[in-house]
Image (tube, rainbow, N blue to C red; front, side):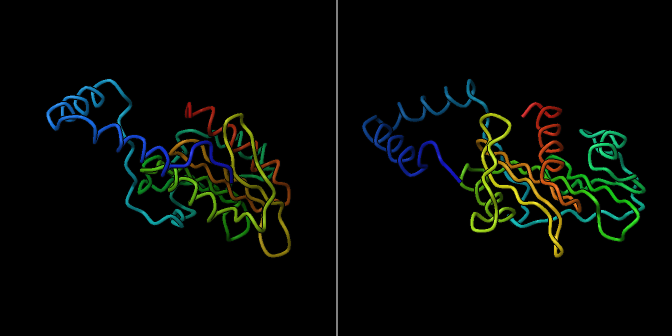
Length: 187
């Protein structure tokens, strides 16, 4: 996975700039930045490899994906669905006739860029996936399905990671669902 600016370099530049100022000025600088910049997104407290736990009978609609659109895009009838509210942005799980989910969508809002990269690296290890660079500005990995597992599409931008697992063979379906999720949530 590519990185645009190493975190340690950014941190050392910020520390050097702060060390040169008086403590009172640092306090003023931090207070001024806190009110004008986007607040830091905290994690949901779940481990990097957290998966949603959603029962087939939950029937809680996904707030950012339409069930009919999911059925058409993933190519299977949706017989059950639900959300996992433990995640900052609820994760959505869709079922069809098989026991396992047909589609799982996970959005992780992490505390750091490195944490978001770690989520994508967990879902789409670089040694077993192809690069994924869509939509523009997002980066991660993709893999088509095989006899052991379905396809996946996992991308990260800034502190946000979007992971899509599908029981289908084509990673294009997972990509389309990831792009729709990113668009609908304005990420």
